[in-house]
Length: 129
Image (tube, rainbow, N blue to C red; front, side, top):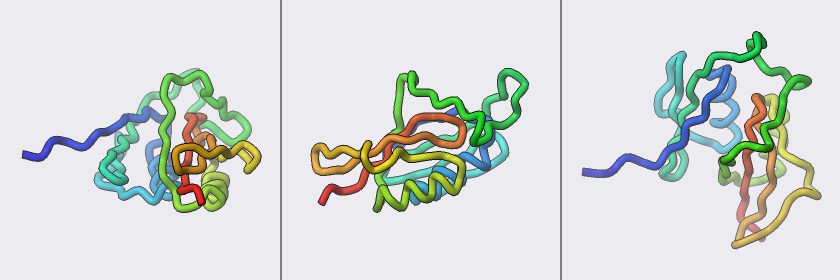
């Protein structure tokens, strides 16, 4: 019997919006989707986008109200074909990838941090040339 794939669960306010963001940002496959959660996959890793009730009475974060969670204890690092393209996709979908001067290279990849539309910190990585 094959063991289950490794996975991470990201608790969010807006499941459809966040599913679309991650699916498009990292070209992830949507394996399962319903109102309470979605399961995305990329190269043997599953990312579960799971609903969490909003706190403080604010139903949805907006680009002007996003509080970037830089003190989080985890950061999702996703492979992308191009950081430049990921930067454009993230901006179009309500997130952001930091500017090119914040990119760095290590162990054969170029990386840059950013955040999703709800403020969760993430990193995108492309193959270093």
